[in-house]
Length: 288
Image (cartoon, rainbow, N blue to C red; front, side, top):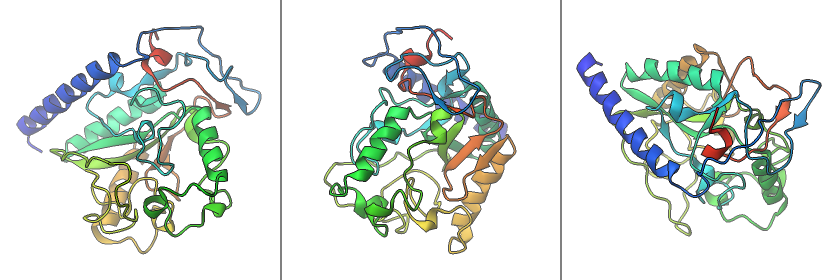
């Protein structure tokens, strides 16, 4: 990408990020309330203090303050996810991560911008209460309102057995992120209308939910073996796009979860044994 075009792209992305920042800063719950930072335990797996603790350890940051050009599509604050409703613990559409993970994403973003692409995050730090919400939903076998899109070939009774839902998530440790690549200039993501006809997440890109991601072969959070990063059925451009994401992130210290092309963890993790539960909001990290 010529430098003049790169500069224009960066200015446009920065302006968009600034506008989003202004909107989120004024949203309910962004008053800046602070409290004593939690300290991560080191003697074994633990959950951070109190289910409603408002603050994160000082090692956590909001991604936009570190890498403002990375695009955001935080699905779990919306009803467009595998449960069909906003998820507990998501108060604002933010990506919160440990600082090393956020800084690594900034380096990956610079690499992709030079090639005419941008990263886009779907989910970052995930409170334990959100994981608990997933577990409650998975146990309610009667609630299949989003099955046709997110798990059409999987019986809901097998979500735990097949590993799609678990009682703990690496996301709650703060160094794991779900993300994709978007070709610049970014097209808008299609609006989701609750109750609309759902299309399987593995359908051809032109048929499934309109996401501005490059074609990865499936949509985000597709509970299907086609989501495995190196599934041999995924070839051509789709496979090349997955490999571009994987290699770009590997170069800055991220490891991919083989079962999910979108899932990456920055190593070494700052908090490998602690599952935090502060909400996803500005007030959780403000004042750091």
